[in-house]
Image (tube, rainbow, N blue to C red; front, side, top):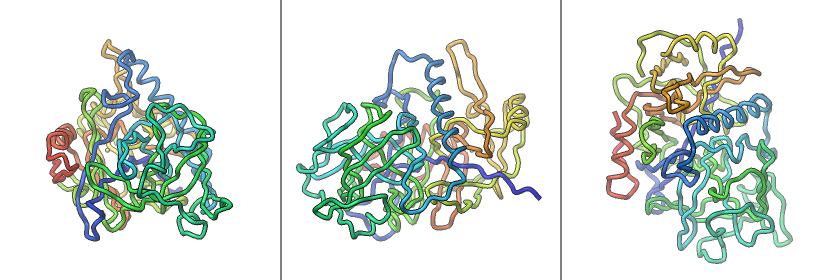
Length: 408
C-alpha cells in the first residue's frame, strides 16, 4: 500500500517577546508579523502593480519549491548547516531590538533555518544595509561564545586563535553569512530574552536586500528562537494571517504560550510527522475535497499550495477546497484560495503542480485562520478566525505586545 503524502508546512513561527527577564512558568504574548509587500514593510514600493507583486510571489514560491524538491529527502547531521531559505525570498519580516542599549533591527523571519544572525561591525564584507550595522562594542550584554560550548557544537564552526566560536552558514541560493557566535539580549515591545545565541556576521554576501538587517531562524532545531523560548511558552506558538487585500497598513499577529491556544467550535488538531532535520514541520495529507460550498487552512515562507500534477488540474476547475489532514479537515474559501493578479479583477487560484514528491501548504491558503503549533505535544491545530480584528487589538492595546488570545 502506498504511503500517504506528507505536506511540508513552511510555517512562519514568529518572533518572541519573552516576559521581563524570562519567567519559568508559561506566559502569553503576541507581536506583529509584517507582510513583505505591506505599507509597514521596508520593501514596500507604491509603484508596484498587482501583477508585479504576484509575479514576485510566484517567483519566490518557485525558488523555494526547487530547493525543497532537491533537499527534502536528505538527512542533516549537526555539522551540516545549510538552510532552505532563499535570502531575497522572505514573505514576512519582524522588527526586534538587539543589545543594551537596544537597537532596532528589521529581520527576515525564516522557518527554514534555526540560526539568528545580524550584520555586525567590524565587517570584512557586507551587503549594503539601510541601517547602521550592529556594533557589539556598544552593547554591555554582548558575550562571545567559547568553542567548548553546546551552542558551538550545534553549528558548522571553527575556532579563532583566542578560542572564540566562529560560524559559517550557507543558503540554498548561494548566499552566505559567517562570523562570530555570541549571546545577546533580544527584546520586543519592552520584553527581554537575555543570553540568546546568535551569529554576529562579519562576512555576508548574496541576494540579501538592503532593507533586511539579518535573519531570525524559526525552525524546530535547537538554536531556533522557538526552542530557546522553551518552557516560557510550553512549546506553543500561533499566528493569524490577515488577507492580502485587508489593506497595506494592516499586519498579521504572531502569538506565544497562553496566547497561542487554538479553540472554538471548528478547531481541529493533527499530529506532526517527525522528520530529519527537525527544523521542518510535516503533516500527513489524506485527501483533498473540492466543492462549491465550503467556507473557510501555517504562515509559510511559500505562498502557493504545491500538488501533484493530476490533483492540481482537478482543483483548478472549482473555487473551494478542503484539505483533509490526519484527523483534521481544514476548509479554504475563495478569498483565501485566490490571488488578485491585476487591477481588472482577474484572480488566479493559488494552486500549482509540484514535482519530486514535495507538497507545500502555502500561506495564502492560511489567511483568516488561527494556526497553532505545540512542539511539546507534536501537533498543529487550525480554527477559523477574524485576523483583522486580532491585528487591530494588537495595534490598539496597551503597547506591551500582549494579546488575550481571544481571536475567535
